[in-house]
Amino acid sequence: MTNRWFDNWGDLLAAKTHTQGTCIIWDAGCHLQGYPMVRWDGKMQMVKRVMMERKLDIELTKGQRVKNSCGNLKCINAEHHYIAEPGTEEWKCVGHQYTDEQRSLVRKIFNEYKHPSTGSKNGAYAEVRKTFPSMTNTTALKILNEKT
Ligand SMILES: [Zn+2]
Image 1 (cartoon, rainbow, N blue to C red):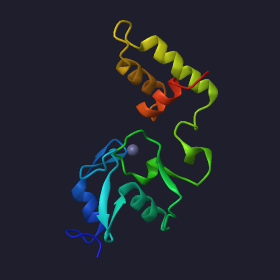
Image 2 (image 1 turned 180 degrees about the horizontal axis):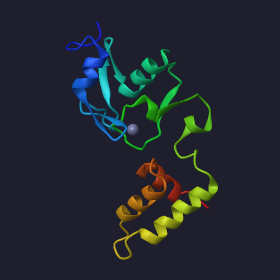
Image 3 (image 1 turned 180 degrees about the vertical axis):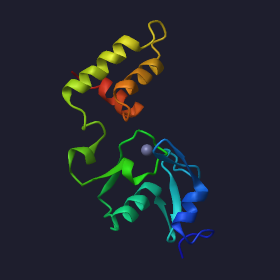
Image 4 (image 1 turned 60 degrees about the vertical axis):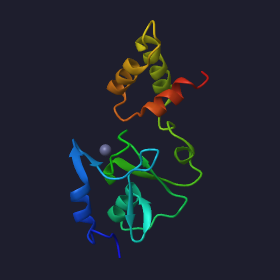
């Protein structure tokens, strides 16, 4: 049952994670896209889903997505995730939690902070994060590329 080496989820977490602020960072295997994965109960699962199920003592349906809210892809703290129900805006894609004003602010920051000669956006990402600490680069880029 459970895992080849650990039969207690708490032991597994203690061995495979470390904390960073309030984030719980997964140190073990990840999906190609960077999502923490674990073999648990005989199947490969996303760690954040297991964490959410254990926190709420529920079984997630296939359609329910567990979305991150702290911007750290390797964070598995259930407190930093929420469940998106199928068909809702937040289920469909990232970034819908931001208002139009916030979105135009993101674009403004990009304009001001992208590197003047190289066009590099690294400085702008950092600057965006000062205002929106939980926004991922992917979300920021998506907002930047939206038609205004
Ligand atoms: Zn986190």
